Amino acid sequence: MRIAEHSEWDRGLPVRYVLVQEDEDGVEQVWGRCAGVEGLFVEPVPLPREVLTLRGCVPDGLLRDVVADADGAPRGLGDVCVEVGDDEQPLQWWTLVDAVVVAVQPSPADQPHPAVQPHPADPVRYDIVLGAGVTREEGSWGEPPAAPRFELFAGPTAARAGSCLAVDGLDAPRPDPAPVPLELIGCEAAEPLLVGTQRPRRWARDRADLLVLDRHGAVMASRTVGLAVSGARPSVLGDGLEDITLTDGGDGRPVPAVRPVWEQWFRGPPAEPNLWAPYDSRGRQEWLELTTRGWRTPAPRPDRTGGEHHLDGRFVTDVPGLHCAMAEALLGPGRYFGREWNAFRDCLCGGFGVAPPFTLVWHDSEVARHALADVVEDPEGRLSYFEEVVRLLERCGVTVLLR
Image (cartoon, rainbow, N blue to C red):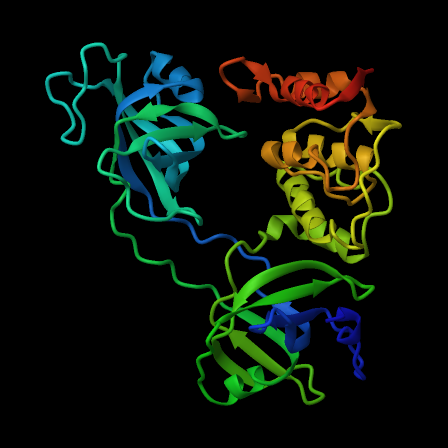
């Protein structure tokens, strides 16, 4: 399907959004198009706070620093990932959102947790009480094994933070959060969405993609939304259009604070370097999210190798900024070359427009060296994020010149 065929209509307003769904043959079908949307930017609904206990924890990285902190003051950990698996593979991933350490105490050797049997040769273990919101991540499957392994990851780069024998409260029942609706303003509905606005109807597949168009009519982003309609009425824009309320506007919507980033991209794909630089870390991360939609548009050309690329390091003051600057150096403004460590490593393997060997001249590299000195990806080696990136580049065959 060519979006250009649906991005124009004979009305006084431009088409800004197109609702599409793939049919059983994988062909995208247009369900509607509209001039506006209300509710695309929303603050996330806060998760209820819960109290959990990491039993028999052997702390590492960030958690090790918390245990070593003698004053016992409450300490924020940010988000903590709990990976649950058996001896062969991880099965579940949980996120303890905005985790705060409430208390730390040595695990009582004479009162083992019912799920484990500690050994005298075991390292010193701790019971760490946390307050956090709890979510189970997509991709989790199956039930935890009879003797699960619990691995912990924390910090801005999700570095390893230790392991524990059990997590009390992790499997507590939790109701699904109430969906947040989305308003399609000035919508020209197509079948079968039009039928759904006239009488209730259930579809075999109840979700679709809302494509966001820039001012040139090209797709700049997409969000998955629910197709259940809770209201429809003649549009405030008139002209035979409808205003349609979707019961569930979907997860992962951007927060209002990053609206200026979307407004920048609405003008069209970035054509100048460093347009991301004025934004804070959250805005820069959203910038990276927007690059992911367009990295295959147009279709990628064969990887280029060799040559010399220049990275402008003046504004690399955080991890998102590093990846924004890296992508611009290798591919140009608004292009995608990874938005975090693992994705960046994958991109260096090829398939994204450029591949080693080549030379990277990193200008003003001291800015990133100092700004990321305390951001650690590898707690064992204690290398900073900046140092890890340089080492990874060199291992992949890139000649890095730090200026």
